[in-house]
Image (cartoon, rainbow, N blue to C red; front, side, top):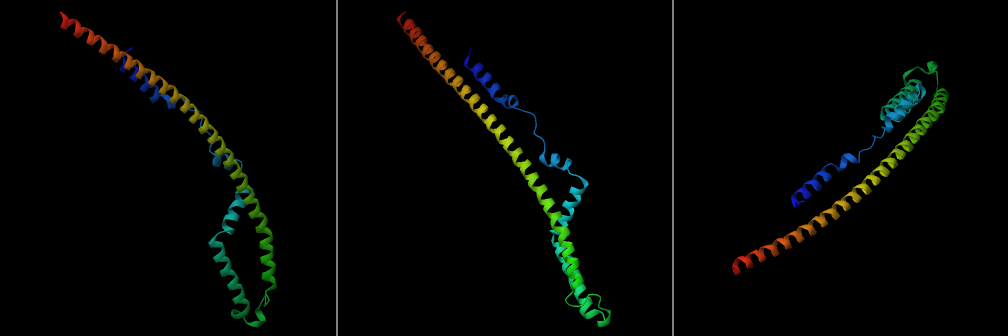
Length: 175
C-alpha cells in the first residue's frame, strides 16, 4: 500500500477518534437538586437569603433605630409603649432569632446536600475524563506504533528504490 494512503487512513482515524469516545451526558446537578425541593424548602431558602443580606441588616437597623427613637424621643413620655430598656423589643428580637436560626440552618443543610451532590458529580466527571484520557493515550500509542511501522516501511522502500536505481544506472552505464 502506498505511503500516502497509509497517512490518509491514519489521519482519518485520528479525526474521528473523539466521536468514538462520546458517552451519555451527565445530568445537571442544580436542576436535579431543584426538582426535589418542596415549597417549604424554597421558602426557607428565600428567608435565609433575605436574612443574610445587607438589605435585611440595613432595614432592621432602621426599624430598631425608629423603635428606640419612638419610645425615647418622638412620643411623649406617657405614650411610650415600650420604654427603656425596651423589653417588648427584646422579646420580639428573641422571637425573630428563634424562628430565623432554624430556618437558616435548614437552608445551610440543603446547601451542604447540594454541595455533596455536586462533589459526586465532579467525581464521576473526573472518572470519565480519566477513562477517556487513558483510551486516547492507548489510541495515540497505537497510532504512533503504526506511524513508526509506516516510516520503517517507507525507509525500506526508499532503500530498495535506491538499489534499483543504482542497478539500473550500472546496467545502462555498462551497456
